[in-house]
Length: 493
Image (tube, rainbow, N blue to C red; front, side):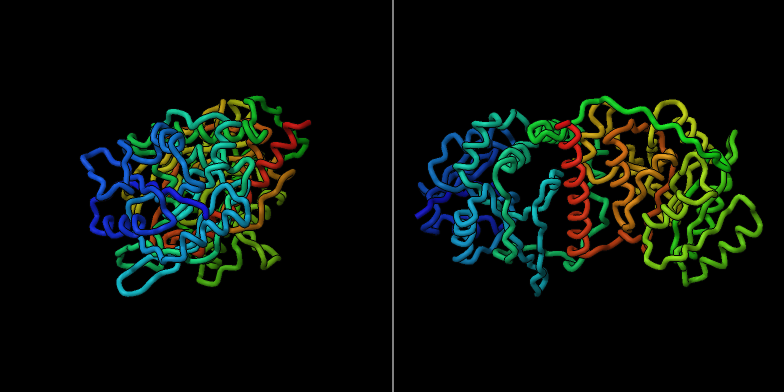
């Protein structure tokens, strides 16, 4: 019979001892190893400890693995109270052995106030290299897979925060990470509303906090080494921009896709019209068949200002990316196409000039600015300025495969957009375009805040379900999968 070691962090929560006793009493488990930095005393010989802050530490993981005598290692990733039915451990091991997987994880339930809420997780694919992939609380590793991976790719580096991330990526190169689509355990959780999660972008803002900069640097280092292992790392060598033979009607176009934003569209258009530039520009508003009065407002704005170009697509199957294509491929579009969402604002009349100056200053396919999060009253809300300083000229396009977004506002070279085209999707279309452009061309950055991103109840990402978040995350992982495959192919030439 296969044997199992459990590794878990110490918790002072009341449910910790209950979870610990379940593991100690299981005949499948030979050892329960508790990580802590205090004076924890094991309750019986089966329970041991490692003096370490967390399993994110490379030193702690290497020490744990060196002394491993069992066939499998199950890591409890957070110190929550977990209810594990008797058959769960057997199921994890059976699937791992049946599939010869390097790592196994499952869906789970969350204990709310009275009801259990299903928490499904995503399948892991080639492009699932983001460090915040949700594997749940229980992860089972094959010790033989770990040993082969570390022998081939080297030990876990002496990182403080990215050890488990490094281990997972190394194991994934030659072994599958198998998702059991069964709710095999329950994570106790007490929240007011367990059927929804917070704003979609919250996690991606973690790096802006000063205390998280070291974390982000470690994650970038680990992700970059992984891309080198799988043949998808790109050196900082770029193509020159193709010179367009088109006669553009203006130097720049502010592009605003919109559907049913009657309360914010006027402010957005006025923000665009207020720009002070040394070049001619227009404002292309693609009205995706609004039904709430937005169309009437746009007709009035276009009628009173010739710079406003109001487009209504013939097609009814377009989402944000499709609306961008309507603007970019029209004869109205300028040499540069600049993003403005229908519920956001440019921070000052100088925003457009700064973006175009940056585009002109280098051989850039795209320039990305920085923005400030504000509420409906335009008051700054935490974390304030989002500047994505993790981007560097040397490694930005590699690290872009790890993070979930690259910032705003975005300015594009129209001739390239016309060669590639946006995906006709309502989420991640900008990220997909940035990855595609960065494969070949330089991306410029402005770290000054140029844009006000409004958070309000009507935002599409204000409150989303677990299922929708999973769908969004899986889609971005698929974009990364395609991009990694393309970069591998490029490197193999």
